Image (tube, rainbow, N blue to C red; front, side):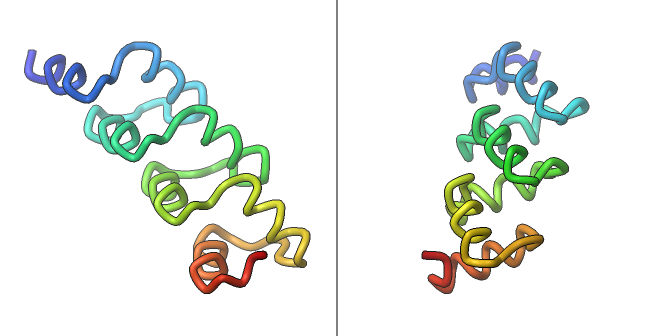
Length: 101
């Protein structure tokens, strides 16, 4: 019962859990679902990352990407500047240093 209350308190419902499963988080724990929800990670955001080549994003990676303003647009701009085949860590460093225009 406590888990149901926690989920409700964080506005986690069956639709949100279903969307996470569809995006590859098939065995997401309630704790991780809460973390994703608190960081406003949506299936749309995860789809954007996937569309730009980040298909195996973990819960922690998704949260880090969101916290560092990594978006599909930023990834496309990085690629246009020649930063191809870079990982999430490098994208974050490039973005934090203002190197992606």
